[in-house]
Image (cartoon, rainbow, N blue to C red; front, top):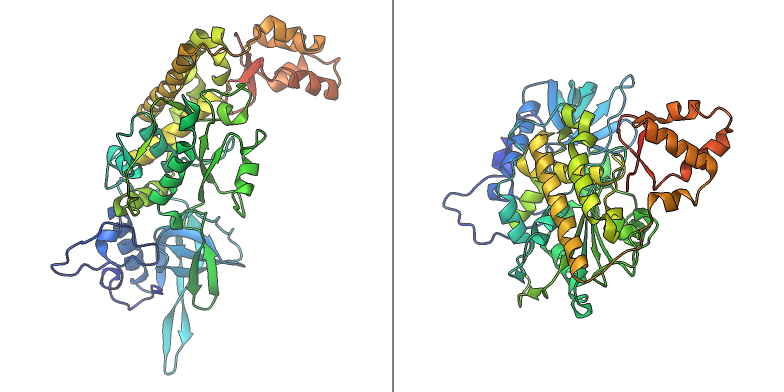
Length: 492
């Protein structure tokens, strides 16, 4: 265990040194505890470790950046990167200052405590925090050392002639996305086979992907760290978990049940989910596993595996670490106009495929539907790009990838004459209360109306009756703003 304190040699001499004439004999991941040589760290990690060490060696006044792990009371453990298990400093937050949250990247300002030794006073390995803020990670540090294409190839190395778009979609799901106030972070890929005999290979695929990844950096496993003066603590380098299931096993009610059955002790901020379908299509598009999938994909050919499984690739492990360190901000233009930017392409797909009943998978609700799927895909792409924000280019690329997965699936269903029950708006309006129909008519005449505005126009309805009537419109209206609850009516 190495705790960084003043007076120690440079961190590259004790942690990430390189031997002269050292030849890398293996490019396999050594495990989070066993990294000791420079080539086992991503370039961005090395730069952050070096700056962390330098900040602690300038004297008693400290200004230092790092990732937070709360260790009880007002104490936190600050580390230069989430995967730096043996490089840290203990920080005690002053009583007048709020305590930062686990996994936050912060910049602290404070001072090192003096402790009395045998003959004199010396600087301790503890920092008293006077203030902190949340800066952006340094630009350029979070660009992965390998490309998306190379990472995707490493992820499915055990397979022969693995085809697009499944390969890229799986990689994007592994890169994941941060959580926001409307949905859990992470991406879900659902795979459906064209023939029943292909089903058995799908759970094997997700199992092989787990084996290809450094699971010790996820919240599926805990890392044990001994902290001087505190004792042993357990932590997860990232609040990111991986879970796979089949359509038979998965609940059709919520994701949290799936996580609890996987044995997670808490719900992580990000969850990568893989779902193996038993048939080429669900019985109904109301099944949660298909409705909430970011990438619904059909495979036509059997998956051919290699004879021997490969160890976890060091390059893929570094790729996973550096991308998960990045939490890009949503650019202002996307944050304000997400619905406008994706409405036309989504509406086009919905109009084209709604006669077959497929339009139910295109949910126009900007807070919880397809626009939110696209935004989270864009987040994953921005991580791979090493960007500190999600820009228009990322959103356009994400829209294309989302459309590609949907259209490919819809065409495969159409080729097999699969049609889902589809009721017109008029039929659905006939099944709800008269007050619900009146609210629907008001929203039709006043698109983008806010809920308070809608409520004001129905003063004779009691609050409970209004809420009940409004709830009956769930499949007939959708939110058009992620700033407040504004609604328009579904036209299909």
